[in-house]
Length: 312
Image (cartoon, rainbow, N blue to C red; front, side, top):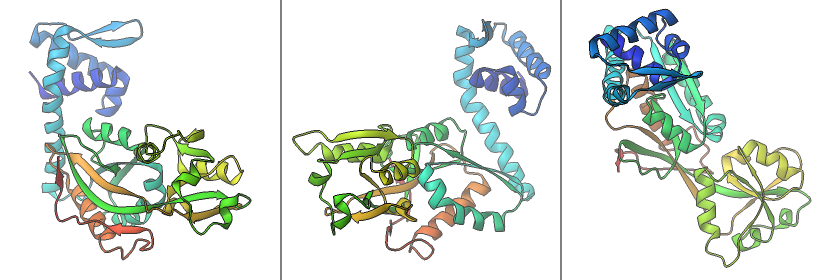
């Protein structure tokens, strides 16, 4: 059995496309087909079959795919390690992060990273935290910057910082005159919140569950940037991270919460994966960037002890 054949089979099955697998491995589609055919000959079983326009694993293919996932993952890690040993200063760093993290926290950090490692190819995947965790587990990204907690046994979790939540409302709303807002007062208003799959939304739902009545959720949106515009238009009020409220768009005001609420943000990566040199450098820079808050906004960021990863 040839490792290149195994890679061709694995990525074709994973991506459910000969074309996508060929692009991933920098090969032609006929080359991928030949590798899979050669692997099927070596195994003595059909591994993939076409059903209409999709590709499906056969029973034998499903067994091989489960074992191939770990093997191919390790082979990809070895390729990265070899590049590090050669000291080529090249490579790829793929990071998954939420919209808020991507907009407000990563640009300065990645600018500093790019200055010291200009030849590293960067890829940023912007998703809700649950989606980022999935990409990390699938080895599609090296590191994920996510809202905590994340209790996945196969992941290492390293907290970076906490951030206060604040209320935002239209300047014409009664809250604009408040010095602080209680959760019970928010319950009386139409709320504009993130979708339910977001970690921040789940935390808010848990806080609202303490009350005898349900909150009035008027709108569920995909990002805090979109939420700000709807709140400014007077369609409701919201709770967002303080950093996301800065800068405020015209017609919007920010009010502290009477009861302090924070969200924790951290890095996650596979427990069984050897981090590449670019990923290790980025992780060290993130620790330095956020611990002590020298380059962060000290008014809304609270450094978290990052002496070592949290082992779930």
